Image (cartoon, rainbow, N blue to C red):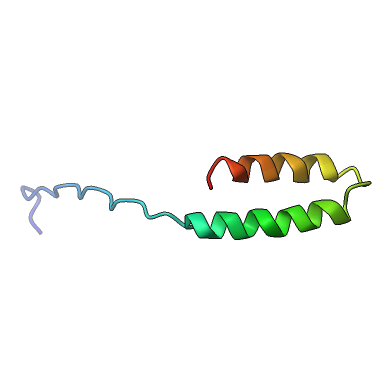
Amino acid sequence: MAMTDTITPREPARARAVFSTDDFRLLRAALADYAQKVADSPESMRVAALYHRLGNYS
């Protein structure tokens, strides 16, 4: 390639979703079961917050 040649930047490919809506429902159901198991632990607040955030996507 000569110094006078220019490289045109390529447009980034469109981002694909990592999870489907059904995946979010499944993750949320699994998290609900886990939340019951850790209900009395300090981790339960973090699990509840994640459960809530997942609900916004499904």
